Each structure stands twice: as structure tokens, then as C-alpha cells.
Length: 408
Ligand SMILES: [Zn+2]
Image 1 (cartoon, rainbow, N blue to C red):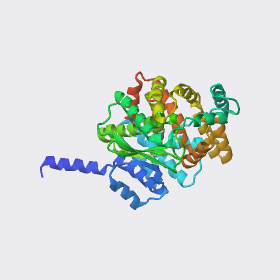
Image 2: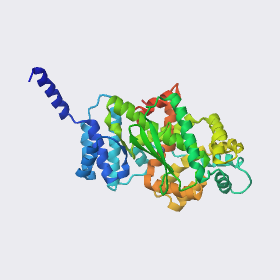
Image 3: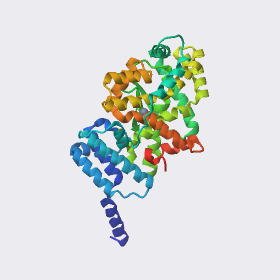
Image 4: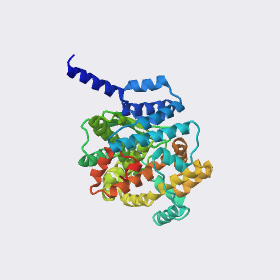
């Protein structure tokens, strides 16, 4: 063996002995996933790590101890990457505490799991938006009923949903591709399902492929179509996961991005960018043209109604924050389930079945609800300072930023 070989062996040994941050992090997330399968939203790292986590079956206390020792030994020179690993792992520690029975208030949970707290918005704000809506809705009578009647008239017949959704996916893809260079192999499959607490879900499969499931428990309203296509597909979840794999996992070798823990700060970026991406892809004028010319005819609805309908939807936009308020009070035991339902119907103007579905979502995912609207506000504030929205959006989707590192 030459001296060069000896040196090479020594350096190989040293690199083997140094704990691999990506591996340790992935093992922690996978270990928690053994206790809570939905925690691991996507994983495409080495299958043996998953097998190992299942075989080891660490207790929640052991996972917590290992997470603490990982945090104290972490030595990563890249600031954003180190911050990502630290913040995500601290969130994981809190999740193990929750699963061990520790109780947090809604805002504590938001801070611990998602690295941010949604502001309390007074009901007067929602009431003001609802009053403005009054003049937009036809006929007279209680606003909730008129609103429900109006919105229900824009439900798409079940046999036309797929054609509408595919048209919106094609459109959002072609708009996104004008601004973001996507890998040639990227694509996703679409499936229609029932019996879920969510209205749609993106399951990232790796190699730039996703499965998007759309829930048909409730009728699909035409205004949901572009939201679903942009949020789940382009430039939302499918693009976020694709860019993370392309730029961070493959480009930089940061393998910790091949796992995605659901109840973690990363979700605030994922949901916030997915929501923000809807308006970025379909700004008001082009959204109206697309609804009038493509979606309404495909759905068999009168295109002349599109302008007024989109005006109603935009008047309702701020009401999504009422969901945070409802969840905060319900999960903090300030109101019961029936009062939570009433709150959603009154301040979010949800129909009874929609409010019921949302409560089941709140019960299953708790403070996760803030990641959508509050997440979007964080993204909007961050991007407002950037000169080119699409460029900054793409850079954000390809970076390890989390809510508290959006500022730096
Ligand atoms: Zn989402």
C-alpha cells in the first residue's frame, strides 16, 4: 500500500466516523413516523433507513434524547442548511412531547411545530367583509343562505370535474414553465378519492413525480379548480418537491430533503408558497379570461356569470383567517364542537357540510391550519421585497428557508 493509499484510507475512515447530519435527521423523522405514520409525508431516501427505523422501534423518549444529542453535535458550515436542520429537529422534539401527552395551547403548538404564530384577527374584520358581500349577492334575506345558494349554483357536475381540472393543470403548467425551468421528466398522476378530511393532496413520489388526489366527498365548485391545480401542482407542492429534489438533494447532495415531515416548519413554506402560487399563476385579469373562455364552458356553466362570481370570491378572501380563529378557540377548549361549527358558518360563510369537513381537518391536523393563510401572508411579505416575483419564488422553492429564516 502506497503512502497516498494510506492517506486516502485515513480520510475515508475519518469521514465514516463523522456522523452524517442528513442520515441522522432522516432517521429521527423515520423513527417518529413509526409512532405516527402521517408524520412522514414523503420519503425517497435509502429504503434500509426506513427498515432500520421500523426494526429499532425507538420509544418517544429515545427519539427525543437522540434529537437533543444531534442538535448539540451538529456541525454544518452552511448557515441556511444548519438553521433548517436545527429548527426542523426542534420541532420534531416538540412533536414527540405532544405524542407523549404534553399539552400546548394553539399558539404554543404553532410556534413549536411551525416556527410561527398566526395573528388574532378580530371578528369585526370578517363582519366587514361579509357586509361588503351583502350588496354583491342576489335577492334579500339572511346572508349565509343567500351566499350558500349562490355558491352552490357554481358547482361543477361530477362528470365534468376531471376535464376542468386537467385544463387548469395544463394552463398552470404552461404558465409556470415560462418562469421556472422544470426537469423534462416531471409529471404527476391524478386520482379521485372519497372519505378524506382534506379536499386534495399531493403525494410526492421522487424523481420529479407526484400523485395528486382530489377528494369528491363534496361537490367541486368551479372556483376551486385553478386553486387546486396551482396549489397541488404548478407552481405549488409538485414544483416545490421537484425543485428541492433537483437542486438540494441531487444538486448539493443535501439528502435530508428526501424526507418531508408533515407537522413541521417546512409545511408552512410548502402550504404558504402553494397558496401564494395561485395568485401568481392566475392574477385577476388572466384568471377571468381563463374562467370565461375555458373553465365555465367546460363545466357547462354560463361564462357571463364568471366576472361577478370571481368578484364574490375575492370579497371572501380574508374570511379564510376565520378558520385559524375557530381552530384556536376550539382546540384551546374555549368553545365546543357545535360552537366551532357555528363560528365557521358565520365568519367563514362555509356551508354546513364544508364546516363539518373543516372541523374534522382541524381535529386531525390541529394548528396545521395556519400554514395555509398565515403561511401565505409570510410568503407575500417576504416576496414583496424582491424585484422579480417569479425569480424570487423559484429561489425560495429551491432553498432550505423556514418561517423564521425568511427574514434573513
Ligand atoms: Zn397543500
